[in-house]
Length: 80
Ligand SMILES: [Zn+2]
Image (cartoon, rainbow, N blue to C red):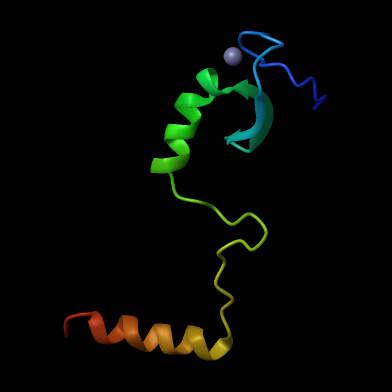
């Protein structure tokens, strides 16, 4: 994205802007927003859960883990 330092909504050059990255459905966009137009986003930043994009939460399963999980699953099943 090109940094314009102007709010993308009101285009008011006298307002200070912050750059936000908004992602949904695999797409991420950058927007520059003044404090008024960033308010809904700021609210979401407060209620949302921070995602760590650099280290995805993927559990690496070793063979031992898989075998242990299989045993655990078997134990849970009621006896036939
Ligand atoms: Zn604005």
